[in-house]
Length: 88
Image (tube, rainbow, N blue to C red; front, side):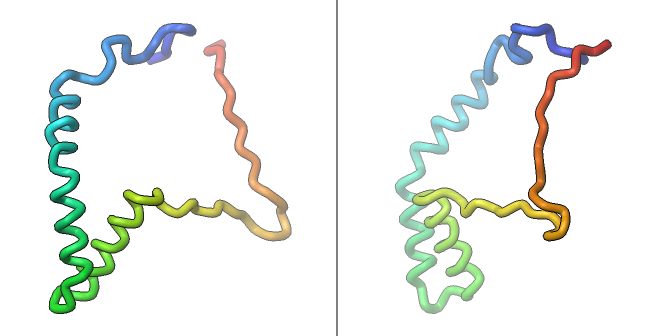
């Protein structure tokens, strides 16, 4: 299905139910962060759980680390081209 130029592919926006779920989940942010911090500090918790909790806290505070994209060293840098097809 092709989109009409200048017209949104989603004119009604995000469904209302999805927004309600997001708003409800955001109300639990503080408690969820406290839980992650408790797991991170719990010496009796499995190391994998402590690392996962620490990583989740860092990702929320600072964003996920950027991922370098590279190709073969002898081929030079990767080039990305984004273009619209006119459908002809």
